[in-house]
Image (cartoon, rainbow, N blue to C red; front, top):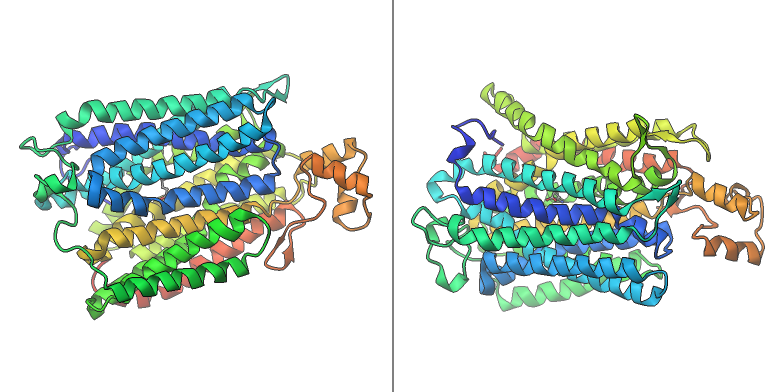
Length: 565
Ligand code: GLN
């Protein structure tokens, strides 16, 4: 990435960039603001188990990153970027409004509240699918061919917009929605958080609607991102040359492959939960099918195929990154809620707001990081992209290693200091900046033009797979302090039950179930997770091993990249 201040000032960027920046900022406000309070709402108001909330959350986020394939396709063939952004924005605003209604009716009508939740999440999934790929590709379209070198800077600015929005949303929505009165959570406040998210999306959509014709245009005033049939600004469009064309045979093969993979994953992820048996398999199978379809295309040269394989290898490893990173909205929020001392200078920070540190640190560190890469590049010492990505993975492992050692001696009643969670977010953000923007630009550099958007699709689906895995991993969070306390009040020795030293009566089991407490420790890959230390070590091992293998593969990847860094 280049910096926003090199090669002249940011004022040299087209004004349209700032319109996209503002639109994306409000959209991410809506998305991350909702994400902050969603799982707490599901657990506290809709009385779901944390385990189920984590699974749903992972499935929801995963689908949000699967639908961009569809959004990109529909935009390319039918509606164009602009219309898809508007459509996606309106859909997300409606989805948030339905969450507002769900959070308004839950006490008196649980059935309706649950239905509204599902419909809302469904609409947001498709809304995000229309919005996200189209706004990102419009950033690229703003620059004519001869100015593509400004793209890295443009994306740095855009990434800041994303995170300023995330920061604002993660402040306002928890501030309004995650409220405690005399230490007791006001379950009816969540709705205000969702309403604020909806308002943000409405503002974002209006900003885009009003300003697009004036600013999101070529210097000659032609619209960018209009209907595909009226492609007046070909000089500005990404991927204007050849498009990928697959034979009928290849497409039939892909369908058969998808079905076979779907059932294999379904078999592997057995369980009764529909998220695990349908949604996760769809996500995993889609990614592999699409990857297979592209790589088996006979028009590919050896160099192209090698480079695409690099994209696949990177995509595989980043699954572990997002799976660990995305604990922010589920298990880490539950820990912040139930076993953390959130006192900051006498003020108790709402549990859902703790995630805000990610956005704050991105905004603070994005520019210093791009300056760092520039300096290293000037000295010829900039690490190769896969090295940066393995550093990203190593950072995640380190962040969980530190936290694992801090929860080790907490027992069931001790509280984790909020400082440790802040440090975790700091280290994870450093990891994010080594991995996320780098990955996006690497895919652009390695993709043969005719497959570029499909390969971005594969890359996004690997994000989706990471989120699906994050759901599975979040669901193995063992009982936190509050559960033990609650069980004690109910007259059940939870530790004894979990250690299998006490056999609970049917009545006790029902009591636990009714109070959203599991009577068994979670199990992952055959290992029983008995405490928070073991839980965090799962991430240390997964990401640590991934970092090492990716690092070891680097010399080989370097060859396969054929000159691209
Ligand atoms: N936080 C970034 C965003 O919302 C990146 C997320 C991702 O790539 N998975 O756009």
